[in-house]
Image (cartoon, rainbow, N blue to C red; front, side, top):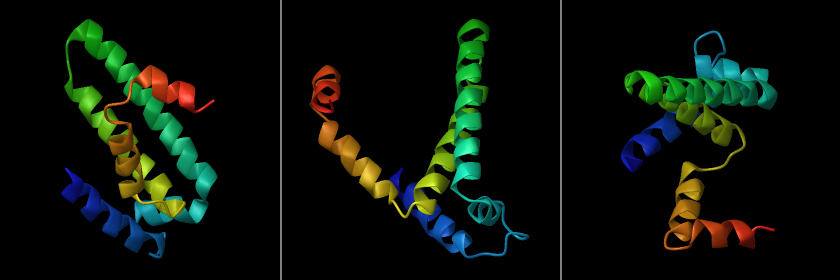
Amino acid sequence: MSDILQELAVILQERKQADPNSSYVAQLHHKGLNKILEKVGEEATEAILAAKDAESLGSQNEVIAETADLWFHSLVMLSHLDISHQDVLNELARRMGISGLDEKASRS
């Protein structure tokens, strides 16, 4: 999985400087962080709605597609902020073996 994340990271970095008329990602970067965050929020909502439908209708395809959109736009956000996906993976690795309740309590 990290291979695809690395490939996407390279592409997203390249697209930051691309012509906004030739690339969706370049358009997002050109419009700025607020537009990128709007897309992350939109995709999060769509993923939530797809999951609710999946529970009642039994279809997972829409959940998978919407989650892919959410992850993609989250990667665009990280790229815009010059944060590596590896930093997020490292944070997840750090949390492995720590109770979720303990980890959350340590943040306050």
